[in-house]
Length: 479
Image (cartoon, rainbow, N blue to C red; front, top):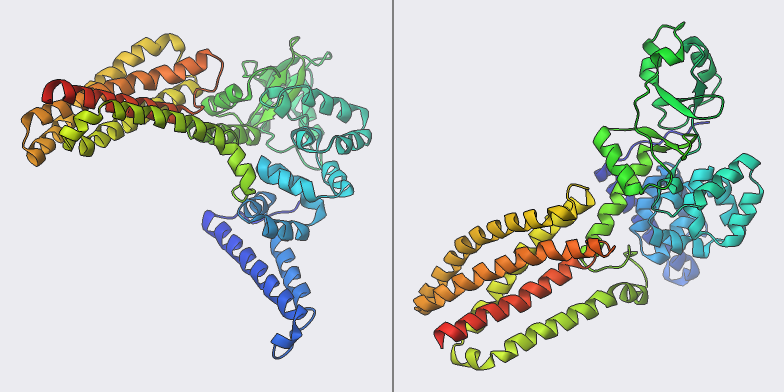
């Protein structure tokens, strides 16, 4: 039986979350009143908490697993576990696939061995492969023991690849036909299915050895002459992937070629699985989330309601680095203490130079990181892009340096101070452009994620550099 869920818009989903939160709050109130009948007048029905839980359970049953996952991610741990207890056990596996890694870990920790086995048994081999790394090893072994030989081989194949490879994400549920049959035979074959695999937009054509020969789209099949052979109407030019390819590269190809599914073949050209657009959308979202987290210096995705110590562990490393860079910046200022004491206006103006430089550097570094992630830039192009960013920074430096220099002149009545502001702004923006290109390129060359801590590093460079340039120029020309 196919269960249909009503699609939730963003507003409707927030309404559902608000309703669940109200039911949770009411549950706490009812349990308190039942446990203390002397404070309730009239006495609260002892079954009231049970009825409230039934309302919560009914609401959860009406929601798609992805929407339930969203609600679980938006709740503190205690409320999350209360909601999780009300979820139908038959849906546990589907919901665990949808929640974030951090929230999934918190749910798996409180599940009994039998519940985990039951949840895993609901999943296909490719879905189980996605969940297996977070499951206790004994649970995975027990579930594998219940699979048939083909499914066990598929699961072992998927688990043999790193999680960021195509092989770990491929789907084994697909439709295969031979090229020497007619379209009418194919249509009769498809009618034997109770339901076609999800996202089936094409049928894969193979030979007797299982080698991929082409694909036949469902749209082409429906309008073709029933007596025409598959070989006559199939497409032989197609996009295929190797299981060892990076999933991020495959996701970019799906976006570029507007793919819904694509075959995965081994070195010999044998069809071993397929990629589907839903998995690629997840990859794109995870890559985007990872890039944002790395720019901020966070090591991994964090549960919003994680214990304090877990959040501290996730954040401390780059905060420590930031502390060191801030200390360097303070030492730069300390070198010019005498200059600042003689011209107090320097203390008021130097944060402007550093702040504008930091913003400009973050703009450059965001563009470069995105270009590297999208495959639009090669390291060999870094020199050309640096020259372009340098010209942009010079124009902005002259423009906005002139503006702030004029303001400084008007405020402090010193034309020389205005010129120093102009020069410092120009040089710091040029430094920001240089470091904005250099940092991610060096990260990429060393095999690191170019987004990793880039925002922290560029801010450190423009702060220390901006202070040094501005105070140095002021010392040379004003004192």
